[in-house]
Image (cartoon, rainbow, N blue to C red):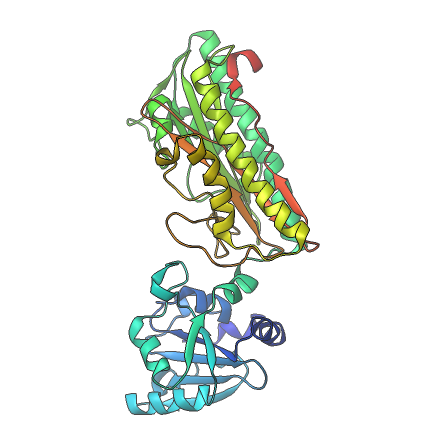
Length: 403
């Protein structure tokens, strides 16, 4: 293993401040062959640099960190500050671990009680048992991870605003393409719209990990539907179309804009679509209001609360069984980032919604003939102000009437 990691910035003081803020005695970072990518990210170790032997890195709330590394890979953590303990046998590993955590009462690891949040649970049960056997209480490092994986810089907020501007323009271009094709009598298919959007992204300096969702009629009722050439549907006059589009500026530290909008391929929108859209939009707005009220009051907000506020609107309207995914996800350099998600369905997301993090709010109702989702992005700035990007869609777009 080379020592190319040495140039990476590791902010020990900031990490220790966070450990103290959350009331932990320390943070015990562990990996074996890349099983814990969260720890690797925090420690500045890339996928290509992961080792083949177990290592531990203990950051106490105060004082010098301690490394525990195998003799074969004794330089694995040399790019980090701290005392080094080298082990060979499993007995020496256990002794070294005991020396590291000492008399600590509560230590954070990438662990979630009852695996309630699998995004955090990266340390295997046996290793947790080993640490507990030393008389240490193991707690979740979920909020610590957010501090170093999910918070945006001022530059990233600016990059998001630029991506948001271009992404919203891409929706306009996609609707125009469909409208012009329908008016001219030219057949247009889902995959053609998808290709058009990807070309738009490339022409405007954007990138994405996957083409957008273009779903017509029943296909819009599948939250993860994605067309492909030869396995897509034609879009016709009188059809309902959902567009879910995500992209970021193709530069280092670029962060995503991830939006969903819906349109009817006609000049006026039938009542059946209006009715469902109004419920979805009200649910979306309830999620935004939940975040705004919490930060205005200066109280802590957990991700599950935003989901619950959003979901309650749809349940009260009698469509709870048709809202089949969480309300939102963290957004960062990856579309689904390592911060708190807005989820009280698939997981009980008890991580805090922290300043300088971004997430989506995207409720949906998915019926047999069509599905409606409305997605915007929310960024909590350094002053705890709630910023909504993406534009609040207020009605189903009558595409042939508007474009």
